[in-house]
Image 1 (spheres, rainbow, N blue to C red):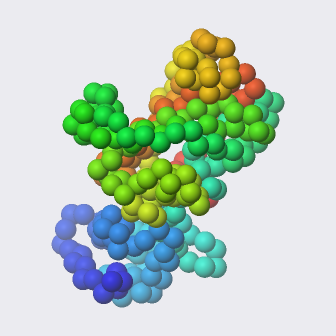
Image 2 (cartoon, helix red, strand yellow):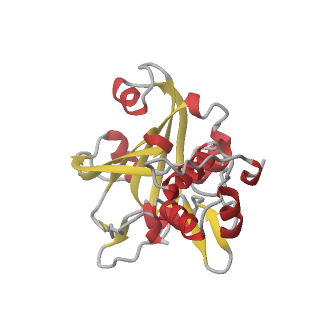
Length: 257
């Protein structure tokens, strides 16, 4: 069903501005998957007729969703639902470059393992599930110029990804967030990160081929979807001898494009 087939009720007497009501209606279309990743949204003329408001009101509502990162405008083509891919991973999520350069490139990714296990108390708290619930734990190695510098440990709830298998994960055609979005209709809308210094344990030492207890940067990333629902816990262990953490801040997520 197209959103042009839906009925929307904009309350002109509400204290909530009309542009914000329209923004919220479009947001709910995204949440309910009535607007799909990569889909072209109706043009301004159609939205004006759909909501029976001025073009300025429509532009303000759509502009708000662009700034929030849910929509992306492509010159000469229209406005599309944001879709995770390698370019967005590059800009928004991978913050490492070789020493002496700020040039960030897409990393080499090597799959290590995929297993089902019981959630620890901490994992359950972060993912808002019961302790002991089934989760998938996935290990990847990431490298630059054929040398591995990062070990990622990813934990996600099995209940949210019931059909996920090692084969599906390994054979994905794009990024992990793209897989979540296109295979499971789960859109990672925002992430938060915490950094701290630590040392390499036996697992990290072996995977990165560094000495036990070598200095390591630990990054904990929480990935969330609509309404701040936590989807993923990702712990990255980074050996920074040859690479730097580089993060250029933008005023909004959407401005990275």
